[in-house]
Image (tube, rainbow, N blue to C red; front, side, top):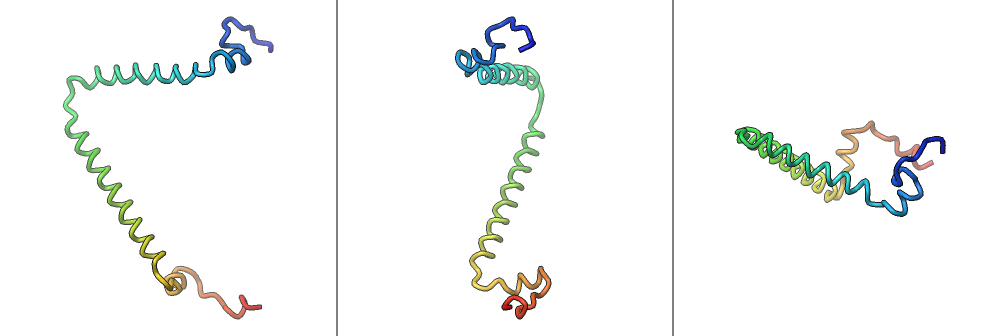
Amino acid sequence: MTDQLYFQWQNDVLRKSIYPLREMKLRDFLVYYKEIDLWTEYKNKDITGEITAYHAQKKQAVEKAVQAYYEFRNYFLKEDVRTEYLRKFNPVDESALMD
């Protein structure tokens, strides 16, 4: 290693053996203090409009997902999807498939 080490946690071997949770704890620390900063930022703000827009967006996303689920479910429950397949793709020459 060409870099000088000033702290134990800069050494790769020590960091992996002694400090395996260091990055996770640093992440927890940053999230905790970011949450405090957000609370102070939004403490005196009226965000009811943002909340209703967020809930409307989530409701629309859920409805879209449910509709897609039912469309795919109905498609896979059909016994014969040949007509839909032929509508989407060019007709296949079945004699060429048999050779």
